[in-house]
Image (cartoon, rainbow, N blue to C red; front, side, top):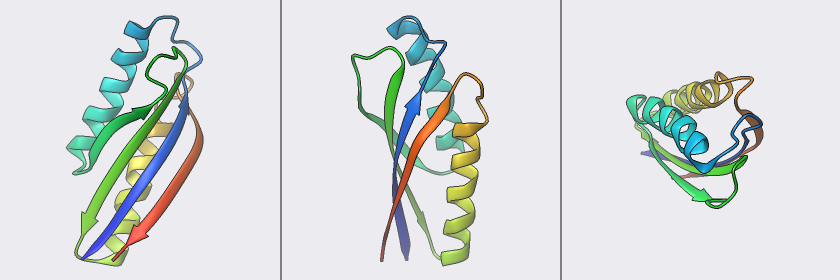
Length: 94
């Protein structure tokens, strides 16, 4: 079994309220969950234009795990220009 966790630091330049931030993050989190990941907002709860997401993925094969991580990053970056990925820190666990 292969497990990876990600800490994704995001910048949301067009969010001007916490409500706008939540709406955007909910779209991203829903798409990530639909890809089979567990995801939660883990930091910067009170900031309008910053967010940190914690993401966890499990797979039976190393290559499949790598592919899923790439898909998840594409989801986060695919919201441009609404979202900029500032950092994407992956930790692998076996």
